Length: 497
Image (cartoon, rainbow, N blue to C red; front, top):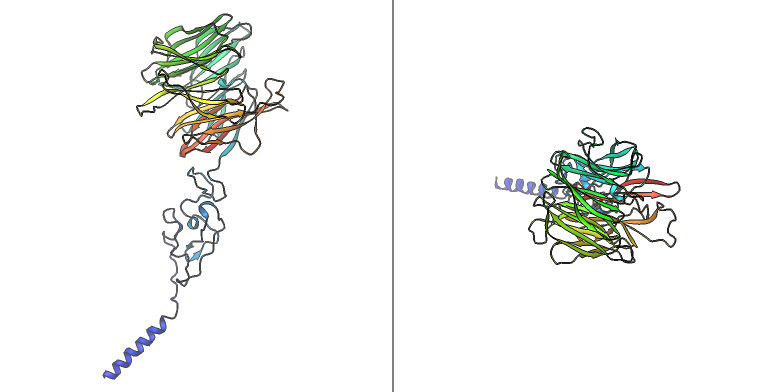
């Protein structure tokens, strides 16, 4: 009996040894969620095959750049993917790249590619102040002056692609229009514009129109007339701007008067319906050559800050003058002024304070001409600190500047144009330039699509800048062609983390 048991043990031991030399039969993959290539576990290699597993090693994937580098085919339902998908490439892979994350998600060798989109052609080119844009639910509204028929309104989606367009029709006798500006008040969306009247007299009017979220006037398209200003023999010679108070209930309207020796900046306050709260009054006076580029900004105390560029002429001194005003446009504190280059263009905005103590007004300005133009930032506007140079431009002119404060900090974009050896004879003929951007990192980036410069009309050059979802930025700008004469708005969507 004992010998019989030893023989049985020996036989079982020999069978066990024989089975260790044969590969196990693979178990069919049941296609569970783990193997299905979800974003949370995509790219697992448990079933990719290894020399020791007895399963054939997975072949490399088709795409080899970016997040796809080194990827091998994942096994799904017992077989390797014939064409690699996110199961093989991993959670960061996208067939079409949409993320602004510093990765080449679609593995084409380009990280976070910018997108350039044609929006619409325009009929002519007025100045920069005739273009504006504003965020609305689901995207943006953009307005611009295109003809004597009225003001165009474009509805753009969140990537700045065109969805629809409409026209705010206006009296043909008021031609042309200028200074179109969109506002967000306590009552909703509104539009300010200046209409110039030739047929019924030499004067200009400032209009306030309430809009719905699609840019359609709520009432007569001409809205409420805020002020009326006589024109001089060479044109109005002035400009106007408006700003909403922090609570959205009050609107400051400022405009320049340039009639022979009468050079003033005037202002008034209206409510969100356009009703007058503070009658027009003189804010600044000057005997300088020219007043230009008024800017106004609502302050956190309920008042307003107003700046003006006092031009002494090409060979004379030029200054920025600024002063704070209360909610009724009464003066607050002392006026401040500081010298700037000829034709410097200011822009006011609110930005986080350096000391972390909340938001404060910041003045940006560009020196338009010269061999080494600069873009400057001036903080602590009523303290002794001087301005800070943000960046040099790389060409000889900075013809348009756009700026906005985002959740990540100050973002800039501008058009720089080269001064040609033989400038165009016609004032509206295009020049050549490039689009640049600067984010909080301080890195200056050329966002011009391709190696060739853009064709730009200096008079109509405009850049409007917006923060888009997902760390993207959007720029709206206009280009021009000479033969045949044409003008086109474009949008640029670019990554700016």
